[in-house]
Length: 80
Image (cartoon, rainbow, N blue to C red; front, side, top):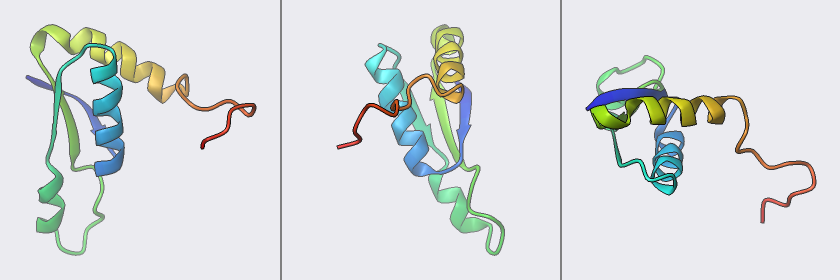
C-alpha cells in the first residue's frame, strides 16, 4: 500500500475515501490519532489516504481531478 494523498483533516480524508470507493478503488484512511501527539503544533496533515499498489496510478489521477475542483457543485446545483 502507498499513501496517495495527505488530507488537511479527517473529514477530507473520509470524503476522498468515499470518492475512491465510488470509482471502484479500495482504500484505507489513517494517521488521525497522530495529531494528538504533537501538542501545540497545527493539527493538520495527519490524515493519510492509502491505496493498494495496483491502484496508485488510478487513485492519483482521480485525486488530481478532485484537486482541480472537478467534483465541486456548480452554481446551479443546490447543496441540499
